[in-house]
Length: 434
Image (cartoon, rainbow, N blue to C red; front, side):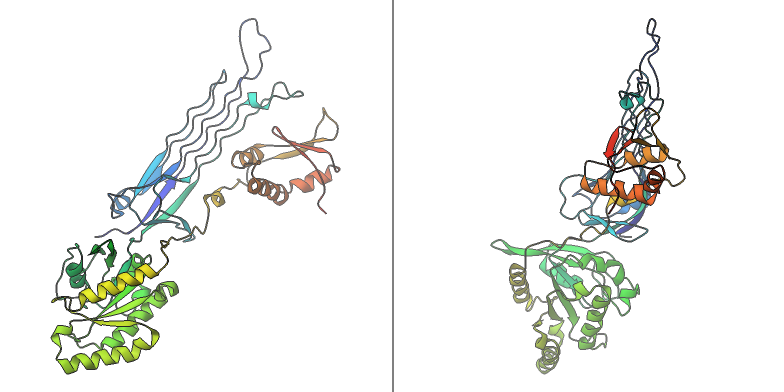
């Protein structure tokens, strides 16, 4: 079975904890702190592999974990960093958060490795917290926690043109007669069980990539039949060719077929339904001259008024095929050259969170006037994943202080404008909000 969707569990590495220790050497009775920093956790990295065209590997292995950073050691020894884990994906893969369904990243145009989840930063050892008034700190920073999520991987093929139509309308025959693709062809429904890609070569640097998907039936947008499973593969296409059985070999009405499939496209994606479209009235070789004129007039009257061009073709005999291909090639040239990329709807930063069960304390310094201390495991963890030098990180820090009642506790202790708030080596001047 063609694997174009997979659910997996990923986890970045946890940062190693900082170490608390003091020099213990002969003739050095009061050695200073020498606890080393913890190592950084490994990253979860995505890499596009041009040799892959399915997500089969992710059906077989569903859990991926990067290595944890090691704890710091005595004598200022730095813990080893955890090993990264690299996930190789085919071109066109989109990564979504399973819980929300929101897009994290589209790997369609990425040629370089993409760090999806950073490993946790290693915690600082106690030697990092030495100050003029704190010569022997007995605390160290815990490592930043790992990020772990269930993800959905979706493969959306990269093609310029997508073939849509009812089962047995002749899409596979059309693809085989115009490209280097060799799809399985037979006269029964759902012969095409996997999406097929083919390159249309028109010479003189003209041509495009065309994708054929399984036939769409009524209810496909709600998951009926196989069409829904593969509609995602034409989401990147810039032009749609609607292949219809003009000879009505199976007794269906071609005009009704087009309306039905357009309706399914619209229900699946409003944007997809608005793509430029041409109609390939296939199997025209099976009709008498007067029958040809009748069906082509009907198609023109129904869809021509909306600017949709109708091309009578026979995929079997190649009648009219060249004219259709050159017309589509010209349409592609006139369209914007930007690739269709799905923008991120959520960032990995949003998965960082503090543990509300971890304690913290807010107190007035006993050694210095007008200095207030904010300490505790919960504060240390927050600092582990917050970059206070970044504007976004500082705003997160302010929100953390407010939402966790720290500002209220400072006010209760009598803090005044201009007083100092010290948080593990970081110092801030305090000012009341207006």
